[in-house]
Figure: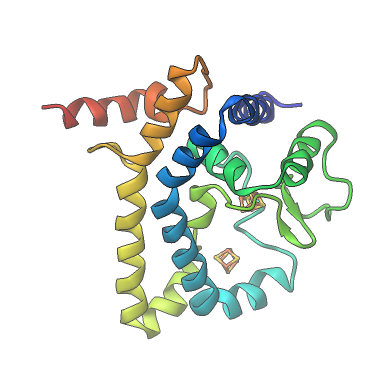
Length: 206
Ligand code: SF4
Ligand code: SF4
């Protein structure tokens, strides 16, 4: 297993252990914290389905060349793992863990991301970096013909920042803090350990 995969597996196990140790009240409070983020993600998926569904199907999924999901080394945030764990059943999370440990037997050789199966991504709420990735040619095709779609995409970019970019208090930072206060540490806690993002947070305080 690569160190990249090991870090993700350890983060997932840590999150599952921590969630299992929380009482109903603690879990309910955590779920409430991510409500608005899940609403954003639902809106985003709907936008992508309506505006990009046909293009992505035709260009990538039919030819099995998805440039989105062949990318290796996507940045996964600790909060991505927490949100996905809260949105998944134990069986769905077991399936993700098994991919780390044993690889995905059924996937086509052409697909590089271990989480991509014949029926789509194994994550119930995929990492934000994946969800907001659009290739240039798809963007040009859709936004070139439809300025309103381009404006909506810019709004999604802003909504994403409101949850992830720490120039002000944001959910992704809060979720790391909740788990750190419970004694968890992970290299995926980029909002606490990435020098660049720490600098952004530092400026927030001035
Ligand atoms: S965004 Fe581009 S690379 Fe990704 S699935 Fe759509 S067409 Fe393919
Ligand atoms: S995690 Fe899911 S969405 Fe992201 S690259 Fe892998 S299969 Fe694609």
